[in-house]
Image (cartoon, rainbow, N blue to C red; front, side):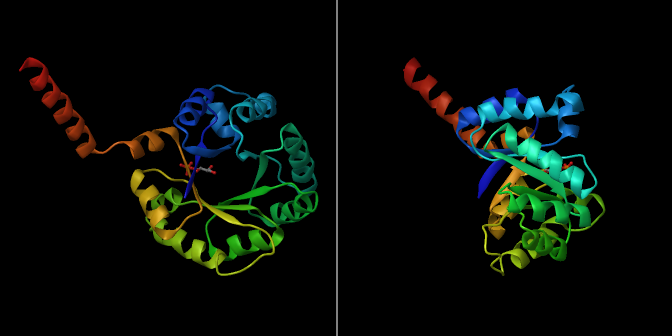
Amino acid sequence: MKFFLDTADLNEIREAESWGVIAGVTTNPSLYAKIGGKLADFEEHIARICSIVSGPVSAETTAMTRDEIVSDGLRLAKIAPNVVVKIPVMAEGLAATHELAKHGVAVNMTLVFSAPQAILAARAGARYISPFIGRFDDIGEDGVEQFSTILQSVHAYDYGHEVEVIAASVRSSNHVTQSALMGADIATVPFSVLKKCIEHPLTDRGLNKFLEDWKKVEQA
Ligand code: E4P
């Protein structure tokens, strides 16, 4: 399973990139707003991210009609060769995905909550599909189980092009574990979750023991 970082924060991207663990980034105007960014500057910010990350950088469009989505998508794709256009699953989004795929633009279809939505996205030409885990948990459903159903359904078929399923709305290291166990292609995680994935109480205990043992050796 590959890791993408779900953020707009350049410091987080630089730090995770220095660990050598991230294969790409997913972002959107809301994540950019969280760090004080403005929608008008979003495309310049995507260029900044692409100057750090060479893997796929998913940039979400805020357009709602197919023509606007296609025109946004073509503009976003011109920023850098690794830009992937993130589009919500809806009829206009599918039509735009179909059109963008004809132009060779990679699409990440987002806000996916069911197997039919995911298969339709793949049929329309989406290169990546992002089912959301945490948002199911938010409404009292088992997000991991829903993700498993979607993942298996998508990978049961050949679409004539590569399709990777991204575990999105990942809120914990357990979500990451479950996604890996199910064979998710990618998990896109916030920086806080990525940091949690590095930690384990037994690692901390082992490190403390290691340091204490060395102190004893030095004092002997
Ligand atoms: C990524 O593509 C999604 O925007 C993100 O994972 C959503 O996460 P959330 O449900 O925690 O907002």
